[in-house]
Length: 324
Image 1 (tube, rainbow, N blue to C red):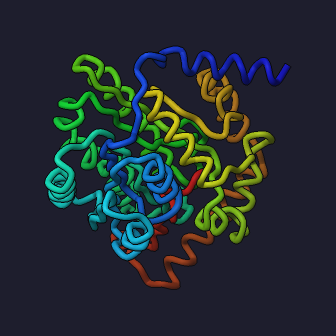
Image 2 (image 1 turned 180 degrees about the vertical axis):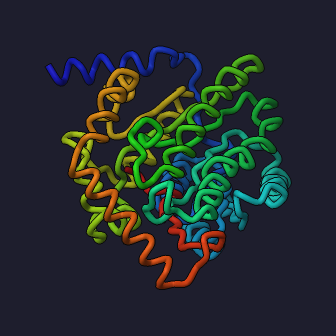
């Protein structure tokens, strides 16, 4: 029965994929943000092996350069902060000048803040997450759209299963990923009118150093992770996540999702979330966990003597984002 449900969900989620609209990446120029580590790096390596020209954009130039050195002349490394609109415009100009065109854009870069409730979080953390995870997607995609339209190319924006999962203690991340989903959906329809395509990539838990640090090596994070029931707690490798995006590019898919266990939830979220939100709100374990998250966050802020308007610790993820 479960295999039937998963199969049905996958069919419904891929109905709008046109089998005639394939995109081969060989000799195409692919721009990837957050390309220095994790999913971004794995995707760059995947597409480079397939014959693509790859522009690796990352705020960590050293990490991106290490990836670039493992490749060859078909790779270009550009340091840029996706939250810097002017800087991203200049970075994309460099890609255009080097390769003469841009065929595919993958907006992958992102961050996750320290767990905190809306009441206790540092407002600067909220602003930075939105600035990188959401505004950074706009800053990446917008200056490249004329290129994409000119060649009938493809755009991928990386959302997350967090876009439709409960967001307690991590609302900025969930808010940003839900907004990225809507951005990608709008872009898909708009680009269809001019002969190009766009898709949204969703991930559950990807096994990265950041995920392990957030969910495994942190007591409260481990408890938050434990709230995910089987099979939603299944993890995938960065290579599997990258392959999901690569296959989506080839199919010009409107959406990709990995692992597949999240697909029924994505399909039925409208009904499931109404019930789930109430169950979580009434769950004494969740209430206790939220109280301890708040207490720890306040204690850390006081011990570090960081005012509410200051810059609290922000954890950049090795793959562009933490998946959960």
